[in-house]
Length: 504
Image (cartoon, rainbow, N blue to C red; front, side, top):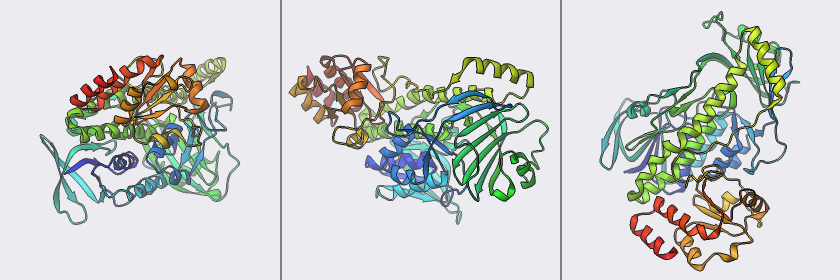
């Protein structure tokens, strides 16, 4: 029997399979399509997402087809700046740039190529999932081979639906997503250019009440435009090439490129309220849908995969601790919702079509001088101590004194980073306990780690396999109790008792 069946081999499903492959789990990925869909969809990811690709061991191949971002501007109809998100010339505290732009089929191909490293991961394509039956120790899925119509069954201990906005797995769970109230039609156009154009090398949100639009610089020979649909638009004809070129004439002429795609989409803002039912889970677009104004759709799915992967590994290896899986939705829901809600707020800035309302908006935003920064949300309650401050937030990725990056040293494990000036006070018993629990101990995390610890007034920080902070302690005397709490989450009762005896 498979440990995990993933329904859907898109970016979230393929990334989750790569992470589970590293944990040694037996994984089956079922995808309806044959091969990667060769149309652009997502075009943006952030530094945290690249860090997750790093953890999955696919970052170099993905980086070969990405470019760092250069910020974003919101402009009014007169070309005046309303909101700015400054680009970052160097690396962020994640040791990656804040933003990257890419062509989604190339990212998916890199993720699928990564699966070939694992004999314990199988990708089956051309398979349609049709039914689900629960058992005490797992689930049976009824599937159809689309090539010949033959029926089959597959079994797994856990099933994760990465099957998109119309998720069948979400239907089985019975979730009714929370609707954050944005349903607006937009025309999305992707073009390949014959040569680079004299256009901004960053994304521009055109807050023009006559026709709100977004212009996205993907790379020098690829551009995307998202153009808001108005009430008098004819949806039956607006995607015809002549009409599309008319809408694009302020940026590009037909002689300068070719249209790759022109499709009408309804932007939604939905967040699932139930992310798990027994052995069923949802992730990616199956769990949340966001307007594109922050470029966080693919990023949210990557965070889902990073959060769920290590917890599934704990549940499979130590069935007594399978309750850890109940923290997945509890942690991810408020985190994902914060991004979706912010995207809705940004959309309300962009989508004003009343000229008088737009004038009021322009005056207010120019008076504020708003410089926008992406948030760093805190996880909901779950596998962390909930002490506030940095707990439940993403940790930095420092370069260690030997030149290696933190995540490359830690791998898919927990880690403790200690203030270098206090490391000598770690007891032999605590060192032995960390080794027994396979928690990586880093006694000198370099200058950036020291700066982080001092700024948070901490002597040590405990980070999870997904790089979120489990706990941060002000005194090393508090660290043994923190490790006992950690052991309670990830080990069975007999191990907990042993941990308490050693560290008491």
